[in-house]
Length: 189
Image 1 (spheres, rainbow, N blue to C red):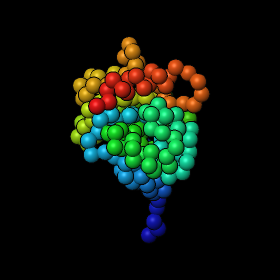
Image 2: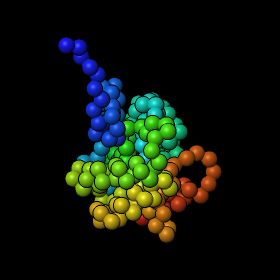
Image 3: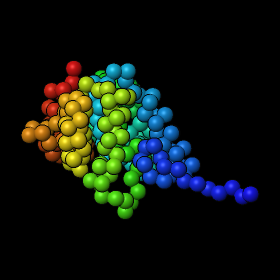
Image 4: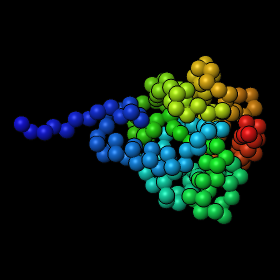
């Protein structure tokens, strides 16, 4: 009797997954859990983690594409080492999670379909696991998710003026950082 390789659905993305995929998800969760506050003030929600594990927000590597502008917008000084900055992020009651806990494969379903498929799972995680004071979806592609969160009535959303979701932090000039700071400051304890 030969052993056959079976793909099981991943709890993080709902897609068929290899043992390596599941192991990578568990590794990401272990890293994130180290910096999870006991009481969540603001739960930031992004679409999905980056494809390369070492670029993940909570990973020990010094990837700067997302973390630098995000922590700068939250006024967490860049002069500190990444673990110290993440500890400060945690101390303030911030936590970042993703709609899909796994990277979204290229040529995957449209974002709206991903939101429709994974949104109810995220809402359950927010209600029964995270229980934050505020929820802050980040990225215009998550506008349909913001509507789902409003309909679920699970907590006030951190949004920009006119109810728009927060922009995804990015480098370069722009008014996004001031808008981001103003929205977060209004919700932060």
